[in-house]
Length: 100
Image 1: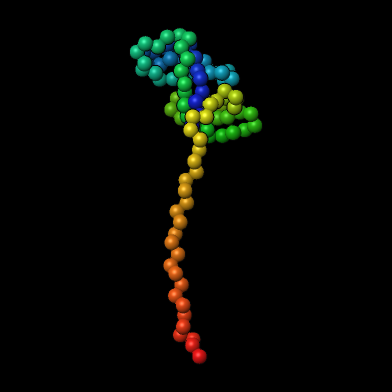
Image 2 (image 1 turned 90 degrees about the vertical axis):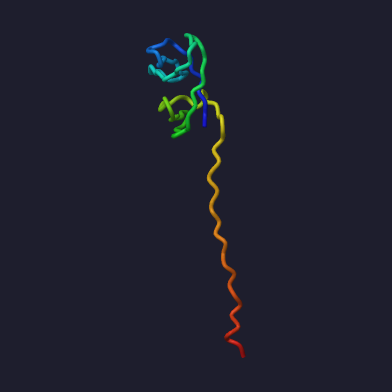
């Protein structure tokens, strides 16, 4: 999981605000029901990295789906791959039926 610092630009509706995201040159808005939010306030948007391509990172998640420069994201939690299930092998019995 990564975080991107965004700056509130202005409220759009009662529950949606326009945000400015560094290195993302497109307008972006998010749902934010915080009662006392003001222009210029900095917030963190979090999401999962879905793609890394050179010096850019695509971040997906709630209210996200954007590609930004890798230098603008901060790692919140590192990825831990799932552990493999290990099967317990049954011991092979000693075959003594072919005796002398």
